Length: 234
Image 1 (cartoon, rainbow, N blue to C red):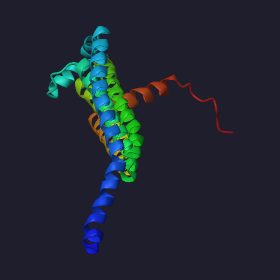
Image 2: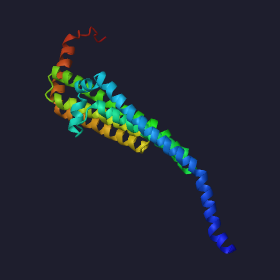
Image 3: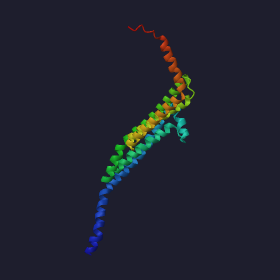
Image 4: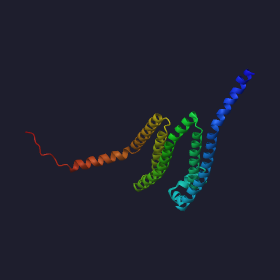
């Protein structure tokens, strides 16, 4: 009888005590997650309504964001996407808070690490969006300048400028996320240097005759403009 009590009943009693001690934390976690889902639903709809009132969809359409989303297979408008993003952000915070309410050491460490990483994700997203808008602006400016200068590959130059800005933006975002930061920096440096070298080489080989004629005209004009020296041998 003592053996049964020691081997079976004692562990069961200890397990029951632990469950009773953890039960309030489990209930608190469930309540936090439930309230978080309800708040996320309300906030998501509120953000979507506000963005529709301020005409975010029309602004994104003028900036070309809607066309890019369409090419990527995304048929939803930006207001809905931002509202869903707000919804999932609140859900994520609610789940992290619910896990923290369990008061378990490994889960607490995981929740703290995740909370510390979320700002980096947000900053990386802002960098990507800002870089995309900047790349479109730079591309349009380069296209106008190239067309005014009479360069035949004007559209190619504009696309190269857009890709260069987007590549630089992607490198910054990956570095912010801490994903192989040294590899990203070195890879971006090698890629950017290779592109610049290839562009200079192609321009030099393709425009060597133009450069030759320009230098000949410049040097001949400078030679005619110079007055003869008045120095004589003694």
